[in-house]
Length: 623
Image (cartoon, rainbow, N blue to C red; front, side):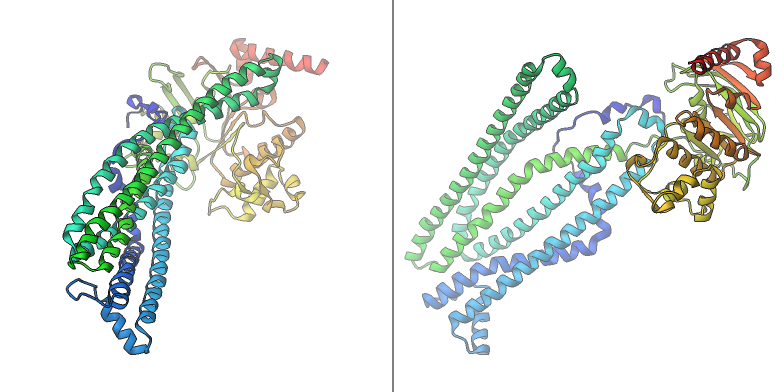
C-alpha cells in the first residue's frame, strides 16, 4: 500500500453523523450472523410476547365487557378465540366466568412479561457477543498497522474507535431491538383493529403521518442543539483542564478573574443550549400527549356513534382506546432513537474507516525460510531512507557486520541511529536490496520471522500489566518459567525480584511504576535474554541506569553478547571503546567506520566526540 498518498488526517476529522447507511448496517450484521440461534430465539420470544400484549386488551374488552358485563358478545365481531378459551376454562375449572377471564388475563400477563424479559436478555447477549467480536477484530486489525501509521495518527483517536464508537453501536443495536419490539405489537394490533372496524382504523391511521412529520422536524432541531451542547461541554472541559493544570502560572499572572470570565462565558453558552434542548423535548412530549388525547377523542366520537347505531360493541370501542398507545409508542420510541441512530452512523463510519485502512509493512509473496539458527551477518548496501519521501534521514549508508561482531553506533541527535535499528526490525518499508541478513534480502523474509531473531532493549521500553514473570515471557510458549528465571539471574535481576513479597508472581501496576527505573531496565534485559535472539540491539539501554546497576549489567552483557551479533547505540566511553567496530553517523551519512584506535588516529568526528565526552567526565569527577 502506497503510504505516501494516504491522508491520515481523516482520523482527526470530527464526524457528527450522516444519513442511514445501509452498507454499514449490512456490515454490522456480519458480526451478528454467527449468533443467529440467539437471534432466532429472541425473535420467537418477542413475537409470542407481542401477541400476548395485544390479546390482553381483547380479554378485557371483548370477553369481560362485551361477553360478561354487557352480555352482548356480538359473534359477528372477532374475539380471536378469547371467548371460547374462557368458556373452556369455566367448564374445566368450574370457576365463574368473570374469575375465569381474570385468571386467563393474569396468566397472559405473566407469560407476556416472562417472554419480554427473556427476549431482552437474549437480544442483549446477541448484541454484546457481536460487539465483543467486532472489538476483537478491530483491535487485531490495529495491531497489524505499521509504526508509520502510528507516527501520523494519535493513539487516542484509535482508542475512541475501539471503546466509545463500539459502545455507540451497542446503543444503536439495542435501540433497533426496542423499535422492533414496539412495531410488532403495532402491526398485530392493526390487523385486529381492521378486523373489527375498518373505518375507525383508517381514521386513526391518518394521525400517523402527522406524528411522523412533527417527530422528524423536532428531532432535526434537537440534533443540532445536542451537537452544540457536546461542543460547549468539550470546550468547558478543555478550559478547565488548562486552568487547573497551569494553576501556578494563573496565580502568578493574576489571571483568576480573567479566566473566570472566559469560563463563565462558555458556561453561559452551554446553559442556553441546554435550555433550548429542554424546551424542544418538552414541546415534543406535550405534542405527543395532546395527539394521543385527540386520537382518543376521535375514537369516542366515531366509535360512540357506531355503538349507538349498534354496528360495533362498547368493548370494541374501549379496545381501540387501549390500542392507541400501541400506535403512538413506536413513533415516540423512533423519535427517541433518532439522534442515537445518527451518532451511531458516525461511529460506524469511524470504525469502518479504521477497519478499511490496510496500510502495512510490505511482506514477500514467497518468503525465504530461515534456518533454526542464523549466523547473524548484517549488511547495509547504499541504504537511503526517509520517513517522508523528500526528506531522507539516512543517505547512502553502506556497512557490513560479521557474525558475532559488536558494532557501536555514535553520532549527534538526529543523525539516524535509531532509524537504522527500526529498519532492521522491519518496522518501515525500505528499498529492496539495501539490507541483508546472512546474505538474504531482508525484504524477502517475513517481518515476524525477522523480529523473532532480533532482541531490542530500548531506553524507554514498555511494561505490561501482569506479573514480573509475564513481562519476561511475554506470552511466548517456547519460554518456560525456569528459562525466564535463568534469564533474570543472568542479568542480575534475580536479587531484587526475589526480595519482593511474591517474587516472580508480583503484580506490576501501570507501566511498572512499583519498580524503580533501574529495576524496570533489568527486567527489559531479562525479557530479551529469555527469547534468546541471535542478534542483540541495545538502543541507549543503560542510559537511565545508575553506575552501580550498570556495572552489574555490564558483567552480564559480556556473556550475553558472546557469539551474538550486537549493535550498541550508546554515549558512554567504556561501552563504545569495547566494540569491535564503530560507526559514526552525521546527518544520516557514514562519516567514519572502524575500530576505536583507527578512528582516534583519524582525529575526525569520533575523536571530537570522544574528547568532548572525556572533558565532560573529567569536569564531573573534579566537581
